[in-house]
Image (cartoon, rainbow, N blue to C red; front, side, top):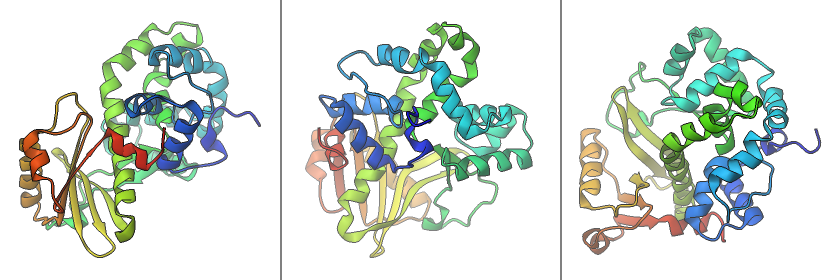
Length: 301
């Protein structure tokens, strides 16, 4: 298996390192294209033509190579059917352990054993809600979440593994249609992850020691929350839409922080397509604004 398809089998890298490698290898012309293609191919050991359509590259490099990639995937999962079901449940659901186990009809104890195994093999990593930065007592009923260590693994278990028989037989339509319906969600989540990496670079002089998200049983509340080495609290909102981010997004973030008894030193907003004039005018040491171009802190293109 010297020419393995999946880099992380032998060499696990951080998301920042994966993004940097992807950009240097495939040379996308801008960060929007870089993000779009990385959201699918990050972690896959192939040269991708970012000048072509994303769907055409999915067909060439993943769907038509199903049998080869499946062998490397099976190496990680040990061919365990329940592992495949749970991984697909996580990829297609809200990333919560409990909901994935219920979806797959696997007991909690058996499911946790499989999750622990996959975390140990670097397929997954565990994420806990950041209740310790709020004024709320930790609620033990709040389910933990899981993150795939590479975007490609997430793509595979969402759009390939659940319908492998058709793909194996050369039928790609269902996979591509499913991806088209979920494409925005997939790219948005990878953008969110990369924004966390950007924040680490911005605060290099005052290292971010705690960084994550806060959610409760009602859903996601704050998708960027952190604390620096000096004790500064950072709260942020990340939006991947074509519309410019406007002041109500900041107001909502502030209101959520108030409810959680968080007093941030700095608010940060990340946007795909920029900000309203009002928000740009409010930019200061306590309000920082970032766009796609700030992905240059992770890799130059």
